[in-house]
Amino acid sequence: MMRRSYVGAGTICLALTSFLPSVEADTFTYRDEDDKVTTVEARLAGEAQGQFVLELNDGQFRIVPQGAVMERKAADDPTPLTGADLVKQLTEKFGADMFRALDEKPYVVGLVLASPLPKNSEFKARSFLKKGAQFMKSVERVFEDFCRQSRLPIQPSRFPLVMLVFETDADFEKYANDTTKGRGLSAGNIAGFYSGLTNWLAIRMNECHTMEVPLHEAIHQQVYNRQLLQRLAPVPKWFNEGIATGFEGNGERVDVGPFKINSHYARLAMQEKQFGWAEVVANDRAFGGDILAGQAYVHAWCIHWMLCSRMKEQYTKYVRLQGEKKPLETITGEDRQKEFEEAFGKEVATLQKDFKTQLELGMKRQKVQPEPDKPAGYSKTQTHLGEVELTAVSSPALEVGGTLKNISPIRAMSFHVTVETDAGVYADWHVHNLESRKSVPLKKQFAQKRMINAPGGFPRTFRVKVASVTPDSREADAWKSGKLPVPEYGGGRDAE
Image 1 (cartoon, rainbow, N blue to C red):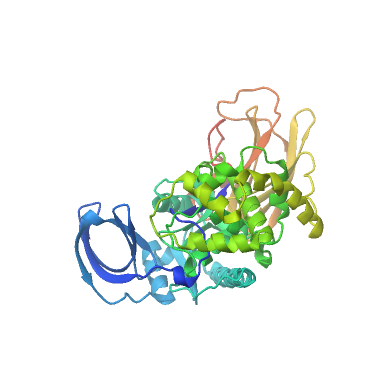
Image 2: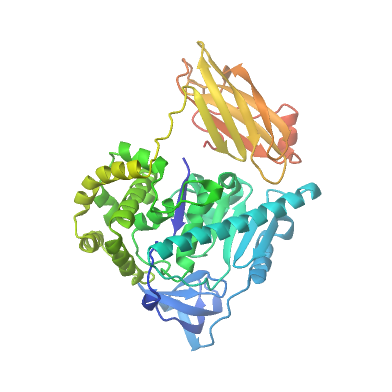
C-alpha cells in the first residue's frame, strides 16, 4: 500500500508568530557540489550543523555548507515570485508540450503529462486544473477552521503554493527520487509528498480520483506556509503525520478535522498491537521504512486525536513549544520523550493505556460506525489510472471477472490488467482505448495462463496489477497487435 510522505527534517507545528525567527536577506556566493561558483540572493532561514539554510525567491530552501561560502553581502529581501512567474519557471522545467498549469492565487496547480495532449483533451485538462485549485481552497478553509477552534493564529502565505500532478507513475517516481535523494520511503511506495526543501506538493494523478492523498499533503503545505512552523525543524514525525491524517475522511468534500474520529484509523487502532507509542514519540524510524510506515501512521493519528481532542490546553502549549525549534537543529530521542511527557503531564505508556477507552467513548458520542467487511473473494484496486473491481471464485480453478474504469480525468487510456496468483498462473484483459471516466466489463475467465518462472500448484491468493499507456504510444500499438507482456513470477510490473 502506498504511503504519503513529508520530505525534510522538519515536521508540523503550530506556533505563535512571536516565535518566528528573524530572517536576513543577503547575497551568497559559494561553491556547489560540482565545484561551480554560484551566487544567489536569499534570506538566511537558519544555520546549524555547519550549514546555512537559504530561502530563495520561489520559496525553495537550499542547504549550503558554511565552509563552501566564499562571500556574503547584505542585500534587499528577494521579492517572492508571483504565480505567473512560477508557471513560467515550471513550464521551462517540464517543457511546454508536456506541462499545463493554472495560476489561481495563492495556488499554482501544474499537470505533468505522459505525452502531448490531443486537442479534444485540452478542455478536460483545464477543468482538472480548476478543480484542483478549488480543492486547495477548500483545504485552506478547513485548516483555518481548525486553527480558530484551537486558538492558533495564522498568517497568509508569502509564496504561491504549488501542487504538481504527474500523469504517469514513472514520471512521479523519477521526480520523487530526484527530490528525496532516496531518503525515506522508496518512491514506488509513495502516493504523494510535500517537500520541505522545494515547498511543493507532488501527487500521482491516480490519487486525484478520491483526493485523499492530495488533502493529506496539502495540510502539510498549509502548516508550513502559514507562518506556524519552520521547515526542516526537528519536530516529531508523529505530530507531522498525525495532524495531516486528522483531516482525512470524505475526499473531495473536505469537511473532516482532527477533532473528529476517522472510522478507518479507529478500526485499525483497535487491532494494532505491533509497537508502543513511546517508540513513535521518541524517534521517526518507523515512518521511514516501507514495512512499518503503515502502522506508524495509525499510531500518529491515535496520538494526535487523543491530545488535540482530550487535552486541548496541554496540546496548545506543546504546539507552541514545537514552534520554537529552528531549521536543522537536533534533539535526542530521550529529550523528545521527556519534552512530550512534561507537556502532557503523563508518561507516554499511560496515555496509550487510556487511549482505547477514550476512543470507544468518542466513537459512541460521534456515532461512528465500523467499516463493513469486504465480501469474500472481492478485490478493488486503484492504480496506474485504472480502477478494477473483481470477484474471484475457486471452482476448483480460480475464476475471476469484474469491471475496469478509466479514472484519468483528461484522456483515453489503453490498459492491460492481470490477475496473478501465488501458483504462477494468471488471467489478463486488454482494453485498447477506454475513454476518460468510462467503464467496461472484464469478462469472467479462469486464471490458467502460466507466468514466467511459475512454481505450479493450486492458487490460494492473487493480486491485481494494472498497466496503462496512452493509446497513441508504441506500447499501445504492440498490445493491440497481440504482443501483451507475460508477467514474471516474483517480479514484472509494479504491483499496487
